[in-house]
Length: 399
Image 1 (cartoon, rainbow, N blue to C red):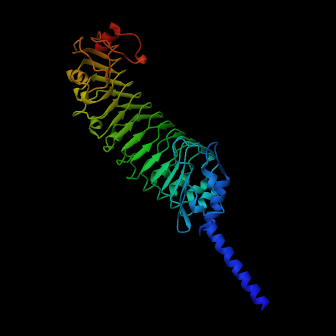
Image 2 (cartoon, rainbow, N blue to C red):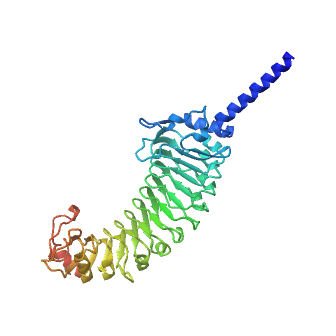
């Protein structure tokens, strides 16, 4: 009888222990449980961060901040306090993250996480959203990320990544957002075959080479390639991107003509400054773009009156000639133009009354042209102190 009672008590104890373990793990898959432990051990809070304070593995991990579960699996992991100004985390990303086989979203807040991206990330076949920005991630971008065929957003911006952008990234069939800006990436821009990509941000890298026609998808709405070493003509590339809302190709070595069709796109910002574009600017209709910056190029010809509806217009440091169209004066005096920079060209006149009062909200700079500025306005310090271009330069240009 005693033996039976002992067996019954042992069975009851075992059941209680199993139940307690299930409560501790919240019915979480043991593999996921161990993966979270490994991830936690490889990271720590920066001073003043308290993200990991409640990561107590004697309780249900699915209640931890940043951990989201479905059934017995972790489906989203957001590491770090998402509130603005959070100190973030430090340490390295643990390869055990690949054991979270159901993971669809993985993000890390800005902080001081360092080291390479774990190659094991490439095993997360269900991943749709991957964002590890504003940290100190180094090394190259694993080409195996191209195996994540369900990935929609890839944000590795503001890190210390180097090497080339893997061509496999350009084959992801569902990718909509790719942000790799502010790294040390080099080499050419790969071809993007998908027609889902709407945002491509590669600014502030050391990318080089030209962009062949057809290598960027027509689905793009935001494109920034500024602060690189890219070159070649892009007119045939740009005319295919007629859904663009934002375009920034500034501070490169692009050359050739700027296609007139570009000014008819649904753009709010067009920034092509500090390149080697040449030739005239000839929009076919009134330009409804808030900011157009074509400064520091080799553009020539007369200024098109179609540009008078642009709110912030930078045409300085080019080779424009002739009179400033009267439509610009009307817009300027009516506060329709906020910034009109025409300095360092070869302009010969502007029909504005010297007594006219330019609205305080507007800025006009005319210095260093082939005319005496009829009205004195404040210019940016980079415009220099000379008011008029030397006559020999103006005569040489006319000749």
